Each structure stands twice: as structure tokens, then as C-alpha cells.
Image (spheres, rainbow, N blue to C red):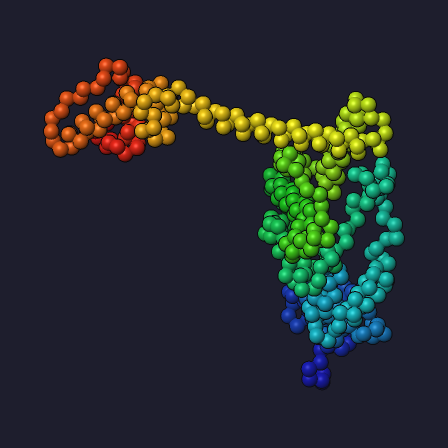
Length: 420
């Protein structure tokens, strides 16, 4: 009688408690690995029936002599972790495998068994055939193979990596641009009964997914090229304080705005070098014009230019002072001559400054202006008191002069707007 709790092969009666193959179509049919691989058939069971691998957790893929004694369940968890977290994230992989395995053990086991072991030697060829190598520009130019080499990870601390969700070994982020892009292909499967329309539709989905991946990588390259991550973390301010740059002129700012569409075709360094070279060109052109001016004035040595510049500066200073003095004198003369036509007429001293300007602009004598002003104000007061009055303005006062004087008296507050 078989011991309680143990499992035996129905064909050779060998103990299969650790690992056995169970038929999914026949009841109570369990075979050992040797009988299953030999295609054993018993009763209604046939070799092409579906099967299920039953592992008690104690079966080892590499044999009992393998270092570490990894079970098949741990091996399966390790392969799942490699697919999920990627090569290099040993801490996450160790946590996925189980608490009994450290990151160092996970790394050593995977490298020794799956890369340098027999499995790695059989699956990873020494030289990949039919690989196309670009020999047009091997020195790192636009067509160089060095474009495919991965970039080094960002130089940020562990706390900043956690803040950004950045994984340095993969040069990747937990939340990427267009995070749901993988849903385009997650449910795709190629079936033999697919027609041409369905195949083309699936190809279109894959094409859209590839374009989203390219856009995701382009944004990463832009963020790295223009130092957007240090700018987000506030490190660029410290670097700017350490290495102050030259002051950008207004013309250069406008030119940068006009050439902004070229950013997508040039790297940040190339763009800055472009404007730096333009600045050097302007400086050289200004220096050439200055040397040509020296030559026109008979200066042939740089020692003579300092004396010439000092003398030129003095001449310009004297000329500037002379112009300022002439402008002040002209203003004073203009102010004195502004009322020259009416200042000697009677009634001039009775006028205010604004009334003097008005009489001078209307070419009206002060006495006549005072007369008109008196008549208008008197008529206004009589109308406010309800006394009927008939305006008796002088004959020399036409409609234009009357309107100008009424507007002036209204603005000055002598009469109300209704009366005007």
C-alpha cells in the first residue's frame, strides 16, 4: 500500500511527489518526467492529450549539485521578475522571488545559470549574423553606430530618483509619456484564420504603438539635452551662479524666438554654439570697423589709439555740453518771446498764464478778451437768476473765437457746461 501523502507514476510506479505531469483529459493519470518524455500511454490516455505540470516546490531545474538549491517555483518567479522589472533591478527582482533570496544571490544565480551557463551558451550566439554595421561615419557623427549606444543614467541622488520615479539602471521612469500606449497591442494576437483586413488593422495598431514609443524617446532626449531634470530639481540655478553667462541683447532674444522651430533639428549645445558664434562675429565686425576708423584718421599703431580715443571723448563731451546749453538758452528765449506780441498791450497784467496763452494763440488783445469774458460771465449769472438777457457780444468776435473762449471758460470753471 502506498504511503499516505506520496504520489506515484501510473506507468512505472516511481515516486513523483516533487514533480509530475497530470493529464487534463483523463482522470487520475499522473506520469513521471521520464514516462511523459517517452510518450507513455496507458488505458484511455494518449500522448497528445493536454497536460498540467504539478510541482511540489522542491524540484530543481539544474540538479541537486547546483549552487543555492533554487526550486522550480523560484526559477519561474525569477524569469517573471526579469520580464517585469528588467535586467539590473536586482532589488525588485529579489523582492518578487521571495524574502529568502538577496539581490546579490539573484544576480549571481541569473548570470551564472542563464547567461554564462549552458542555457546562455546555447541561446546567446558569440557573433550575431547578418548584423548591418554603419561604416559611413565611425567617428561619432550623425550616421555613426554610436547613436545606438545607451546614454549614461542621470546623476541624481536616491531621494531625487524616488521623487521623479526614475530607475537609473533602465534609464526609465515609472510614469512615462502616454502611459496607456501599451493598450494598443496588449490584446493583439495573430491567428491563422485572420483575413487581410484584420492583419492590416493589427499592423496599424503596431505602427501607432511604435510611433508613440518614438515620441516617448524623443521627449526623454529633449529633457536630457536641455537639462530639464536639473532645472526641475533646482540644480541649474546653482550652476548658473557658478558659471555666469554673457548678457543676451534684445536683438538676440528676438532672433532666438524667430529660430525656435529649429530646436527640433539641433541639440541644445549646437544651438548655443550657433548664437555664441554669431556673437563673436558681431564683436569681430565691430572691431574691424573700429580699426578701419583708426586707419582713416591716420592712426597706424595701437599705442596711438588710446590717445586718440581720449581726445575724441573730450571733443564729444564738449559738444554735448554745448548742445545742452544751447537748448536751455533756446527754451528761455522762446518762453520770453512767446507773449512778445501782447505783453505791452493794456490789460496784460490782469491775465493768468493760461489766459495769456489763449490770447496769444487767438491773436486777441488782452482788453478785448477781458471785455468778452465779462459779457459772457454776466449773461451766465443773469440766466442762472432767471433774468432774461440778450447777449451783446462785440462785432469783432466771430463764431470760432466765441467757441474757443466759451470752451476755455467752461474748462476753467467760470461758467457751467449747460450755459455754454
